[in-house]
Image 1 (cartoon, rainbow, N blue to C red):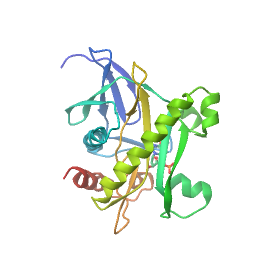
Image 2: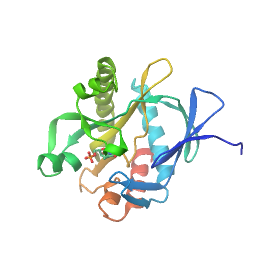
Image 3: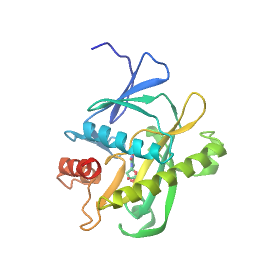
Length: 235
Ligand code: TMP
């Protein structure tokens, strides 16, 4: 294998340079962390599942008019993507109360919302990804107002497409986190991943959790949940 320059290693993925300055390779790891890295573990087979699931979802979204960074799946855990400058925001859409929303506002998990919500976190591990509003985003020059508008429209479109997609597979899309990037010509595209690491998936009938909450909350059968989601998504 040719030598590749690793540009960055994150908690769940490594990023490599390619000969084309506009393209990168991402490599998905089986490493799992939670609570900003305070909890660490391994979910065997997760890297390959998240690679497959992310690429499958990004291709479905492209078909529905959502531009993404996806270029080409190389093998079971590696994918070629467009090089982008990541907008340092975690964009969270929620359809049902859960997780930090339920905790922050003192409500139970599982309350369906009439309309989806959106919130932003400032992507900064040293600060524990604090919640941030659109005025703060402008003050810190993290994105322009036009970019934030584009990101919001794209995020709700992603939600509409994915909610319907998962409903057909007997899965409630509870909430999820997206990241966006800017290509060299300034176009905003969907980046990062869409996987059981970054979404909450509940079985529509039993409400069984089929996502990373099984790891975060020590619920057991973590690998089984990832396998089950791969099966429901790709068959
Ligand atoms: P939260 O309820 O903990 O704020 O999480 C909302 C959604 O975002 C949930 O689907 C999990 C996902 N998420 C990430 O992808 N990365 C993170 O670091 C966190 C905290 C949440």
